[in-house]
Image (cartoon, rainbow, N blue to C red):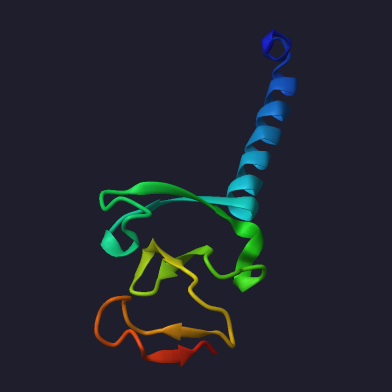
Length: 111
């Protein structure tokens, strides 16, 4: 399959450059692959870490709906990402408490 590339160094170099550019564009503009660690997203993700492929087409909140997972940079740890689930959109009312516990009747409006 690749024998025609090995005989022509220029063709091989161009093919390598094309594949490198395609991989770079894919990983910076379309998909971000990141580990998810910690207990905050149990039982969706395990504590010791799962890998997430995030769709980068929904940057700056465009196209986000209730129930989506959002990948973000943790401000105090710039090299780490966090993952949270969207529980409400602007105008929605959401409960502050956990169902079945005290305080579940407190509601706030998402701004």
